[in-house]
Image 1 (spheres, rainbow, N blue to C red):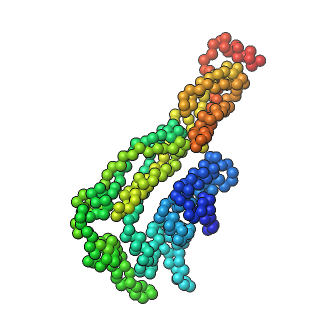
Image 2: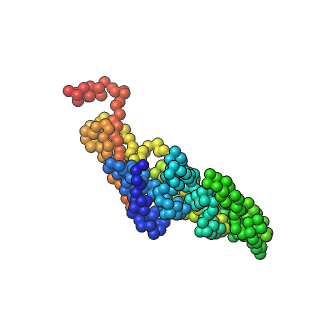
Image 3: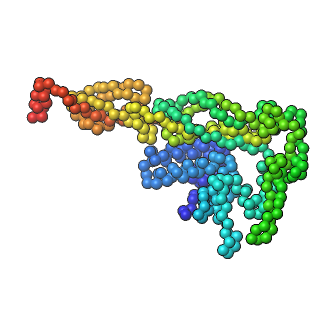
Length: 364
């Protein structure tokens, strides 16, 4: 397997880079190395590498795992599934650890050694950021080209307004769980090929919290979250293409114990246009013209994304010729692509005797 480049090096950012710095670097590189723009050898592979690095470093949990374990945590074990690795305990003794597609890497310690680090116990009991949401959205061709505001309604879990996410009724207090005595986990002895191991699992009474509330919030029944429909007006940036995914921070699920909201990811599905096709940031259309217009030249009206526009047909234009309208394509940043009008000469099917004679004279 080829050695992968460091994800921070791929995006050209330091390990201390903020989420915004990572996003900015990704957008710049993705625009530069998009296969429709970068025609050099290996452009598709570079673009894939840039996207892979961004998917890891833009997600706090995946980034934390990458910073601790490197690429290993996201690579498949031999004969396994993506998201695991193989650990050699000794000569001829190997273990495949499968994270099930970016599962929490701290689970290794519990599965193999039978315990979790103190850092992990502390991390799990504090407020947790909510899950990300993923949806698809259909966009007309013009809205993808120029951007648009959209009103959306997303079902999600929101922080309970009655208890602020604590799950407790106002004035109620939390008490130590009687089952686990505040540890959050219960232990049991397990036999293995190496002998007896003490393994632990989350306490079934307090669900690993170490405490339970005396009286649960009547609105959320102690969960700290309620189901609701989020209504928002979002901005779709200009230039998005079919299959692009846009991240909207803090529009995902509410976190546990009053933790922050996850993110919302919208994957764009651009609806086909009856006249235009897109290649990168350029648009293409076909325009029929008559034989006299092609031979003698003319000024005609052609459709653009912003309405009709006059276009000059030079004398002697051949069918299949592409005429360029500079700056009439897809908008991206402060720039725009071009529009190309492909000329198609329409051959008449009904000619009068006079017209036929004129064409014979022209041929001779």
